[in-house]
Length: 118
Image (cartoon, rainbow, N blue to C red; front, side):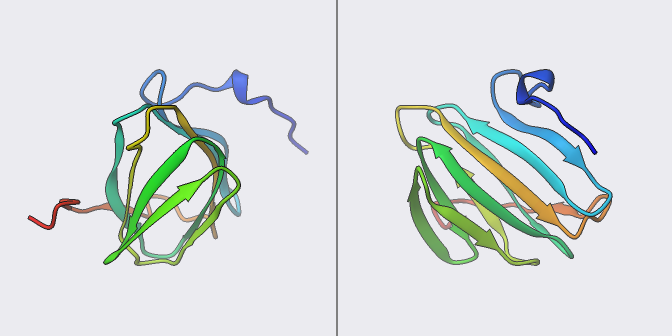
């Protein structure tokens, strides 16, 4: 059994990015924060599905060719091999819980992506 408070871990980029509360053995779980104007690199996972539950703010998420405007309380499910790109176009902090499963070491593949289609 594990009990951890999110304040015991740090965000990857200081005040933003992902913060893992658990990595494996069967899933990854964490919190992600994007400051206003920040984005997160487009990527996909070969085996893991990724889920987000928005806790604060708003998010524009691109999943393959579709764009979704999401807000607090929304749940987002991304299937394996679907390229996804996150951007906070709002003027407040975006915060969400995320989960990836089934756990696979080094399953993230970053891709070049332009939200403007260039």
